[in-house]
Image 1 (tube, rainbow, N blue to C red):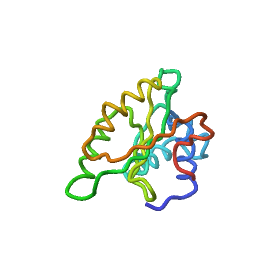
Image 2 (image 1 turned 180 degrees about the vertical axis):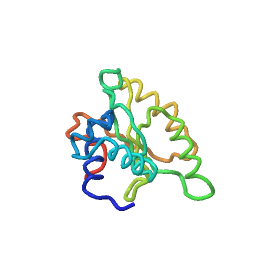
Image 3 (image 1 turned 90 degrees about the vertical axis):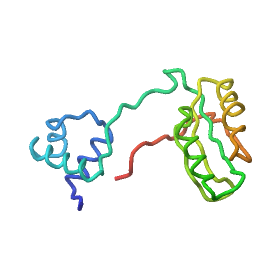
Image 4 (image 1 turned 60 degrees about the vertical axis):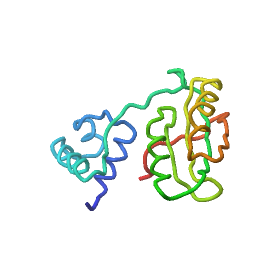
Amino acid sequence: MCLDRFDDAILAALQRDGALTNAALAEVVGLSASQISRRRAALEEAGIIEGYSARLSAAKLGHGFRAIIRVNLRGHGQGREEEFARFVASQPMIRSAFSVSGDADYVLDIRARDLDGFADFVHRHLLPHPQVAQVRSEIVLKTLKDERGVPL
């Protein structure tokens, strides 16, 4: 799908506020609501718009503790990465997980209620996992930028 400036404007507006109606988008973008509706449907069908969700305040919901964990596995191959990926998918405290280059195999973004909850997760779930060889944690003291979405 080839995007034009109207598609870019629709995507930028929806990234700022995914609850915008087609009528509101029409005012922002400068097209009719019916044109917005067709374009929006095409962007959804093409998989460019993957879905809509609300941004929640982790701190106000009692999950203000954040840490970044770097994980090294004991080895690679023979389904080890897939087993670890299934473990990651099953853990609600892991909000994002990345396979990375460098001195770690994976980087995990963790949300917890507090330090005790984080420690419990590390000691009862992560460290005992049979594929985990080493864990290094950094506690997030202050968030300088936590941009969501894609630069357009």
